[in-house]
Length: 88
Image (cartoon, rainbow, N blue to C red; front, side, top):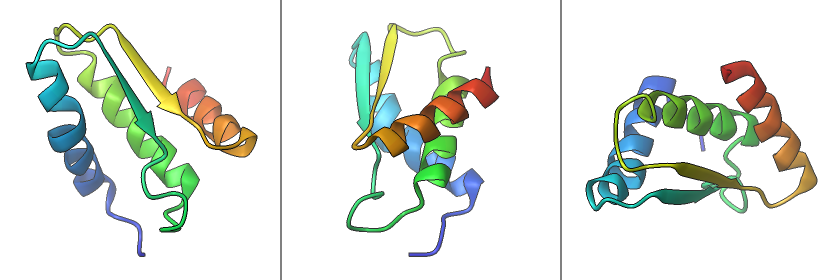
């Protein structure tokens, strides 16, 4: 699968995954490494897209207080930690 351009990836993340739960007033949400397993989407690109998109979204006032990125492996966890460090 070719990587989705970042602008499209952000839209693909925000619309179905973040907006509906926030519109329902949820205070926390968790995300797995979407498509990074058997579908082979690059973990680094998925992490960067997820972290950047969520970081932008949480700047908007809402009920959202906690976001959890669920990682399958220690390697995935390290990539997400790196992406989070670069975004701060």
